Amino acid sequence: MISSYIALTKPKIIVLLLITALGGLFLASGGFPDLMITTAVLVGGSLAAGGANSLNHFWDRDIDVKMKRTTNRPVASGSVAPAKALIFGIILNLIAFGLLYYYANLLSAVLTLSATLFYIFVYTMFLKRITSQNIVIGGAAGSIPPMVGWAAVTGNILDPAPLFLFLIVFFWTPPHFWALSLILKDDYANAGIPMLPVVSGVPATKTQIFVYTWILLALLVATVYFVEELGIIFGISAIVLSAGFIGSTWLLKRRDSIELAMPIYLYSMAYLALLFVVMVVESFISG
Image (cartoon, rainbow, N blue to C red; front, side, top):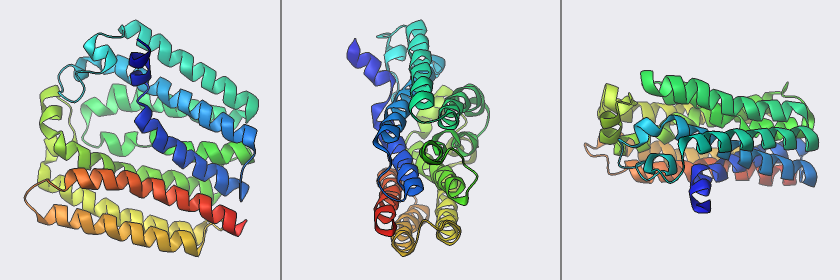
């Protein structure tokens, strides 16, 4: 039973969100952030993300039973009752809000809650089911953690840094998720989910993935220019990592098969994690 509730939170997804939050924390602090604030952001962020994922299981149970990839999820398989998943998700988010409000500040708590609300009410309940651009807009929810890290330290987000951190994750999300959706195209079609490969086809999806990697590179260059906390180390790392991303998506686009989709999906996760790890490193060096 405990393992089922852990599965509700999708822990593997949470790890990447926490890495981006750490980037915001360290960048705002110019080095190692306050331990209490860091703990609040990591624990609160984990609880909120886990709660949001639990609510996603509750709402998407009708879809999950139709897809091979998701039929074994706790609610879809019947190991956790829908009502219990709903209550569990709400409780986790309430605890997360309280932790962040008490140990960090109100802004970080509100931002975290807004990510959950956007993910559930805008993406899960609405966009996911009606438009092939679902993940483009819906990606805003997963882009908030680095802003939370920044806000927890500074108490505001009126600075170029949190905006660019948000945009990096926001524009990373479509190529990352579309690579996976190429593999799961038939699953999404069976469930009636209008993911881009289902609606526009595989070639168009490959092109969009490739285009977004170039947008990411341009955004990262702009980040180095506008965010004074970042410099040559991040700039060089961003270019090298993006070259690998662009090159692999170009090969995907050129080939008729989708055999590179899974390597690109995995690389995209390492790509985002490494970008934010470099932010942490540079915050120490420059600080």
